[in-house]
Length: 136
Image (cartoon, helix red, strand yellow):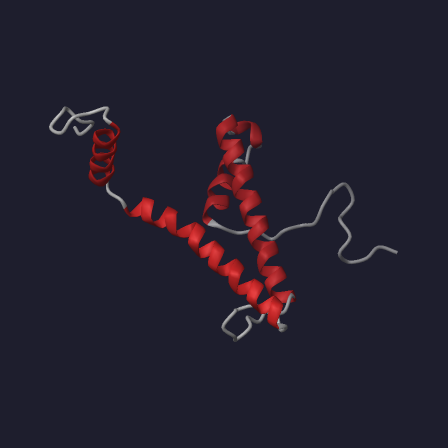
């Protein structure tokens, strides 16, 4: 006996009811078949289909799975023994410290990088004050 969710004869995989602007554009172009598309457009169409399928699966999973509750405590973890809580806080602090250096670097302007480079070259003796720099 065939179940309702089984694939139709000759079809491999589930049927997805997908809609979206990017898919509609490609479906208009593929009425004569995929050979009507250039190789780049075929890849873009495949990527659009994949993105739409992943989004549909994500929505389905979000509907089926209960939402994860976040713990309402200072450590923001489910740890409940003193050693586990301390380790959770240490992990969070290490992650925050590791991320801080990248935040500082991203906030620097090109002019700040150039002046830091000049200062470093003067310190190590490879350049003299007032010497031509990398500034444009």
